[in-house]
Image (tube, rainbow over all chains, first blue to last red; front, top):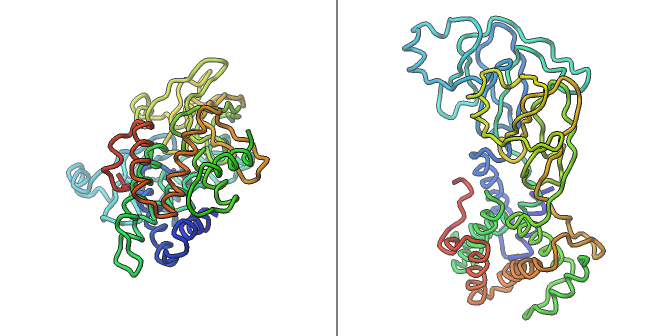
Length: 194
Length: 196
């Protein structure tokens, strides 16, 4: 488990001085910061019922990257663009060609127009939902996700956490140590091309 | 060389407070992976089964030893690497396209690989990747990097252990030298920003 191994490294490298609770929060922060970039991505299949245009992001999704409908990648659109095309765009039905995120920080998106046909059944006889079993007319959401980081990130993330932990106001604050940890973390991230 | 030999050789050059053998080996394990990530010295070739009518492959589960995909070959021919948006520029319907042979590959992030177009029947491609070097969990585990790269591994590990010992005046020039050797001379001026 990466979170536990990272926090164990933090504890070892700080000789027990680091606050484990706060370092856990730093780990979560780093996962979300990494999730803002297309590094750890996932494609999720979503069924279409032929009447609903709005779809929720998966619980683990951090940032929506792409939306596909059936075999086509949809263009992101703005509310203004859709209103310019058709003031009654929300009522329009047909084959989706675009998607819109209606509110900032919304964990959902809306297809335009409303898909008027339900997707095929989600029965994966060969266990390959993106292969022969792909349900036609379904939606695919490509997103970054909130997940345990892989083991090969343990050391740079531990140093990144140490840089934050020993840079904050505390009874063990050590700005010089924090800066060195931060620099070494940056070097390691760059070596990994992150 | 195995992990025990590397750890012993490295321990003899360390000065200052002692670290446990297992902790030193752990740090060397991480540093070996980082050095190989940068230098790409150790590559692996894995056969990836490409299923019929399937373009999308999760790297984590299909290629667990691959740290970074370098190239993909089909029948001895390298596929062209393209960016994900380029697939959409080539065709609106690329996501379910089928062809006689794969022509391109693309990645979205570290762990989504696209082989395009898909094939009508199952087949395989060779994926050449920078190896996620073997974790040095036991003294008998092999060290993957060649001997000439081990000084870089030990220097990086020494920087980490110097930090643990709070030998900050000694670690700063070591980090600067490592950064220059890894061709990142500007690192010494930066703060970690994984969101950029």
